[in-house]
Image 1 (cartoon, rainbow, N blue to C red):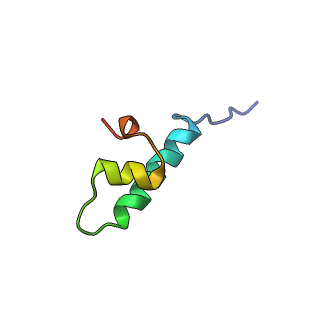
Image 2 (spheres, one colour):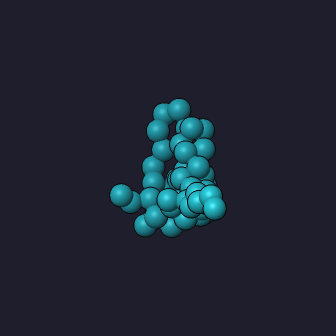
Image 3 (cartoon, rainbow, N blue to C red):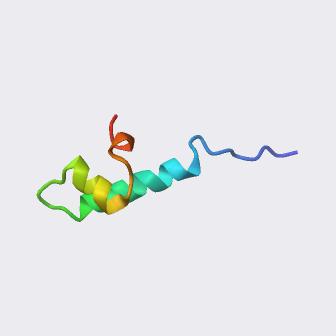
Length: 49
């Protein structure tokens, strides 16, 4: 019986990260957390580390 790989993070976390990276990549001169929040639809609290 083979073990099934399980994700180490919830799938939505990966989606959020990709949305943030995509937004940052569109701004060559930097971007604020407010801009990222506005463009991704994520709350600024999700952007804090």
